[in-house]
Length: 115
Image 1 (cartoon, rainbow, N blue to C red):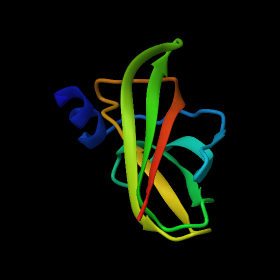
Image 2: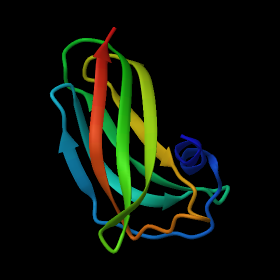
Image 3: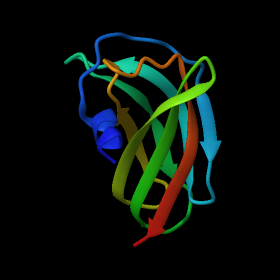
Image 4: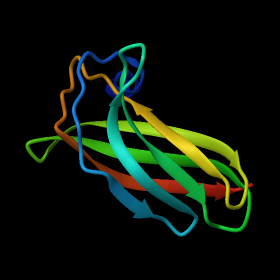
């Protein structure tokens, strides 16, 4: 648990790149995923999500495995709330790249609950 919280909260010091990934759940479409270095030096996974359910989604959780040489070395998570039908939202899943230096990532789960 502590490691997961650390992976979400700490600063990053390098930038890596990844091929854009796309995935779809029955309620949320996810696209344009890539590694990104932010203005304040944090490393994250960025992308776009869109509510495709036709109903307002109260909570959306997007989960990633961080990989190095195809070995899982950590996780990253982002959340969004109160997303209306058809509405898009940004994904910014921050992780601790001081300790974790992935060369790729994999979208592992998109959970969405209706409001």
